[in-house]
Length: 453
Image (cartoon, rainbow, N blue to C red; front, side, top):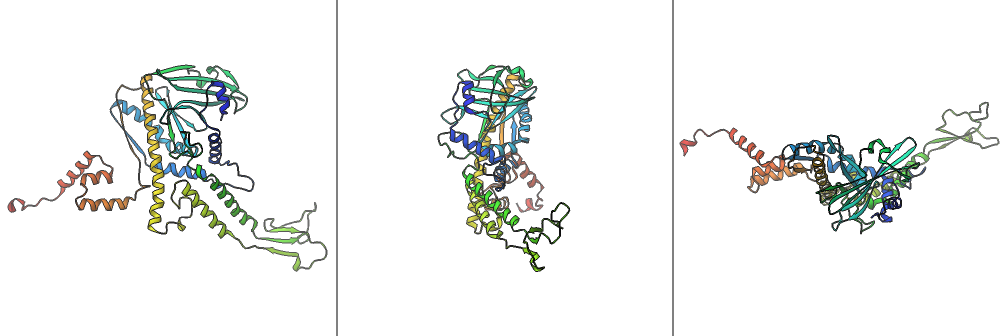
């Protein structure tokens, strides 16, 4: 990431990211990339940050569907958005790990593609009263030969619309801007305008997915925080404990210490060993007996207490990250009572539901921006569109239990058959009514109905 001070000096603007937020973002990014600052030759990683973010992203997007209606315009947007859905899970994982993700559509020939800008690759400049980012700088870096080319794209909301500026720089190092150069120096940027104003819009031409967790790093900042921001120290402790377990097995590996004369030496004076993992040389000196020539080393392992301690740490991490016990820890040691099971599942349910709401808000904004670009570039017929989001709720709802409970409600007359089908089979009202009518038509008729009338 190019330093904030460097960007500030280049564009003569203030970056709305405090020093504590910048430091925290760097820590979260290193943790996600399995490069946490505490890792060393002796402290190994459990890779918990990526596991936590990946589990949340999986649960949020596992069966997510977005339906478009409204005609040819909607059909075009649906086809373009399908490519977003194809890679959404991995992008949500990165966004959850770093506290947020920018989605920035742009016209690419006859299509609308999307740039996924990670939290350490954009610089918010201004926010509105609701905490929405209204002015932002995006960094795009390319390597050409042994030089680094960086493009800063500056979006600003004005009364006329959205003002966009593009500036390019060339440097010999990755983390500096270097000297200004024309956009045409990089083939991919050759067609970009240095300045442009998009009129007739009252919202930014990007969408921000903010992880739905209160910012306790900088409470005055509208930026999001990592899904594991409240468990950084706990994750460090877990890595240390995991390393202790690895060392317990390594240091306690069975060995036989032998006198250096037991197997003789080769021509260079090095002791000859039949198995260097099992045998270790011990220079005792002097005259020794046969019994003293071999000493077996087979210590007692303490892995049970270390594993128990690690499991307790994992439970603390699960709680801090809003996950149910057993997600990372041993599921055999949790959920002893019905109350504990319910409370644990509700914690995950709240985390996933809140994240789905935040993601839907970002995607609705993204689709709106794609619609704007489709109009500007004339990529689709004029028209309107409507969207319907459907997130799979099997993670937070017991399907079998819901099915049985709903059947009882139908039987007692509290729930209609139409509502039951809509809820359990994900059908529209029209489809549910048609299915019920078809079932009723197949029912055998009472031949004595008229006679008994």
